[in-house]
Image (cartoon, rainbow, N blue to C red; front, side):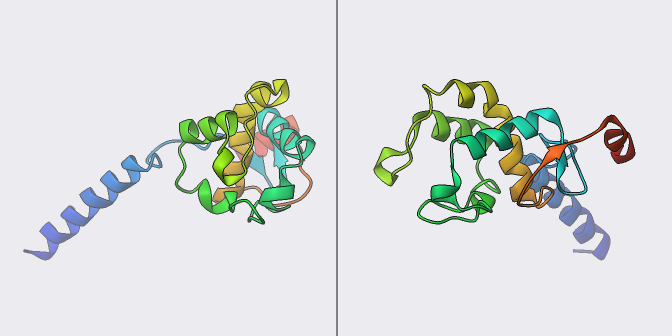
Length: 140
């Protein structure tokens, strides 16, 4: 195989892999500036995380305690699978279901966005705040 053919096949394979993992041309489900200023939806997800005290099992930095590291889990878990786990739980592993929680149902997309941002390394652990319109404009 020529170098050119090898390079072309490598590029095609890498593009296919990226597309299969949902990263080719797809924007993240969150907006973040400076690692701690986020859009309102993601901020609502972080507030939900805090209100439900999810850190008791998953750790204050989402890196796991008695529950798994969500920083690692969200690297492979699809949004649909994430939502099913949160809403239905995994009772055999100690994960309660949150399907009856209004706060979770109202902020499920934001909760996913927050945890995906942590998993991607774009959102830093700790306190978050709302992005100002100036922060959003500076990001774009």
